[in-house]
Length: 389
Image (cartoon, rainbow, N blue to C red; front, side):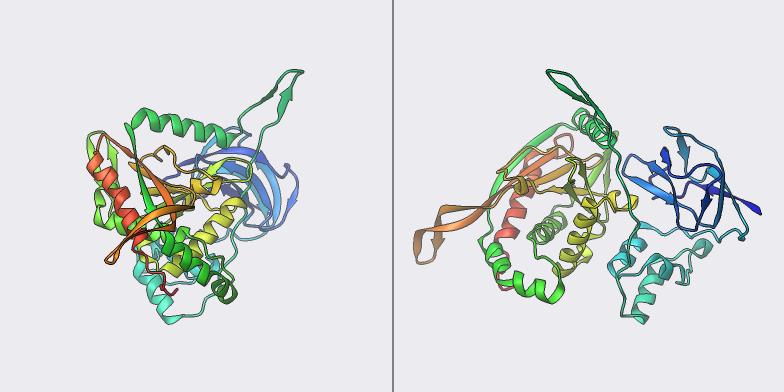
């Protein structure tokens, strides 16, 4: 038997450490390849580490609640297998392209990399896709969340925040302390979009198996507005303004346990409307099943929150640091409206929503912050109800 050091794997470029939550195997237990060994937590997401080999868990090197650096050995395994090859690092862009094209990790490992240390570059994966058109969407690893217990007495119930709620609370307070929040409100007529969805939804679902939601249109219009007003797509470091070349849209998503997570559509401007529908449905579905990968919640440059799903008209969303703005989309309502036409004005029923745009007044003034919300509204109102997917 030989010893194999199980290390804490890299979970994204911005994650340097994780906390041990609990061990799923005991010392001396026999383990099979892909058996789950330990639950870990980062400031983004909780996940599990599986065994890369068959063997025995000889020794745990860290205990629950201890913090471990990426690349540090967390356990010693005994195995008769040769030490497995180390997996290559893949950039978020390459992972995003692979996910979009249905390339699973095993297939990704077969792609010839021309970058440093055989790293697969954007050019490498696009060349591979060009030569291999038909792909199957791959399954994803499972991730799990932990929750705390509760105590009660005759008059009240005391329940400690779970770990995700504590992190969310800390982030919200940090954001309010960092950014000077201001919110602008704009009403938008989305009648054309509602009619389009009603016309397309049944056929689209029958042909693709995908549910046709309106969030894809909202994301597309936000991306167009960012291209027109790129100073919304920035962050701040001290007195320096950092302009982002890429547009990565975060979607604030409520989880079944009441917590919040923000999956990110990387390079959102590279998708067609049909592509946005598929990736949004996939990200939200896996978010609610606790199946997101850590890198899928990182790197956002602008965030959208769909408060209309709770029946809310408008709100004052808190900025997701280190971003400088966030858009909340309210519930769609039918309203009596004055409709202006070349033949004259008349009263009709239209579908309306409110857009609530919170922005950091340190770097974004009302002209830009309010103007951006209006720009999104104009793109929503100009949507062609004859658009094909």
